[in-house]
Amino acid sequence: MLEINNLQYRIGTFSLGPLSITVERGEYVALTGPSGCGKSLLLELICGMRRPNSGSISIEGKDIENLKTRELPVSMLFQDYALFPNMTVAKNIAFPLEVLKLDNQKIKESVETIAKEFSIEQHLNRYPNSLSGGEKQRVALARAIIKRPSILLLDEPLSALDSDLREEAIDVLIKIKSRDITIIHVTHDRNEIVRLADREINLKGSSNHNFGT
Image 1 (cartoon, one colour):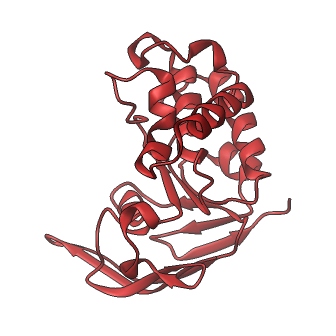
Image 2: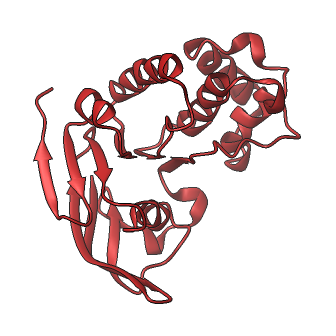
């Protein structure tokens, strides 16, 4: 469970919050609102990239202020995927496990398993600049969930894809949704919201809509 209590963050003349949100384990939430309202900023606060001025963020009952970055059970997929250009696909996917200092054989097996699941096993020795947009997205998603996070944060991950690749990506996200991972997905696309989300939270309008699943 993700609990955000009276969160407030200020940067320059912009202020986010005070904001209180509870997201249940395994829930898929679409985070919407006009550009510049703080959607991406909220994701950065949840994953510990920024610290709030006041309020708290708790995951499974633990305040993230008391956790080291590597201990946070959170992964984030950026809009540009943020793959390391000087690393192979295999090394990109393995990176979160290497940070955790897992056994090399365990890392290798985990990478091979998730690569097969995402149909990218044939690309493991390639570099990101040789991949298509859809392939990059699958690599980035594989890297994001390989450490089995409790929460997956998605910052408009489908916005750069054409319609065919977007449909493929939605199918992949539906599979990830079945893993009982809490997902918060920033998007402006109504099709993504209806097909993927259990609930929509609109930051600016303070609206909260549930969708049948």
